Length: 240
Image (cartoon, rainbow, N blue to C red; front, side, top):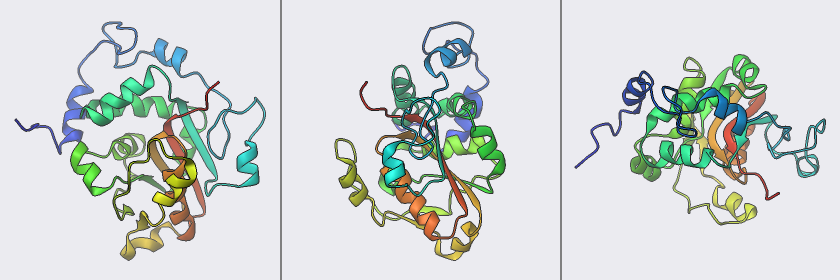
């Protein structure tokens, strides 16, 4: 039987956002999908590199890799590490069609340091687009659902395009991920001038190697964007 909500994530989300629920982490009731206490405990503010959002010592703005090879981003901000309980929450959002997670996860992202000013200063908020096959499979683009809740008036889902399917990125080294994504993003040809001189915010859910965000940002940089900030919900950190 087909899913009656497929293709209608905004409607489903608006309904779910109004229904009290248990906290998915501590099971407190009634609560939002993730309660304030669990956000405080599992998504504490942390010092992260401004270029790639990896952990750095307090007071250090950029990691050595970003100093040696600056990425095409002016800033990269992450709300939390990709560690329990967030992988389970994000998996429900992305892979189980539970678009109602978009609102609480966007709230988590918005509450991270410097995210609110980045959104206020942005001219455009662009979700990292999915390849057409992946979009059909999931029924919605999770980055777009986050962006719409972060800055609905600034979000543009049709300016940055995914031009082709790419092999699965999981398990590949960073250099190979970057090769996979060469030419995978482009600006809408009739509207490419829309990014020139603008402050852009790129939105994605999870950052692993940074290959997708860096490839998308390079297209924006080539198109003349004045400033590019990436906002990601979770960052995969190296093993401790």
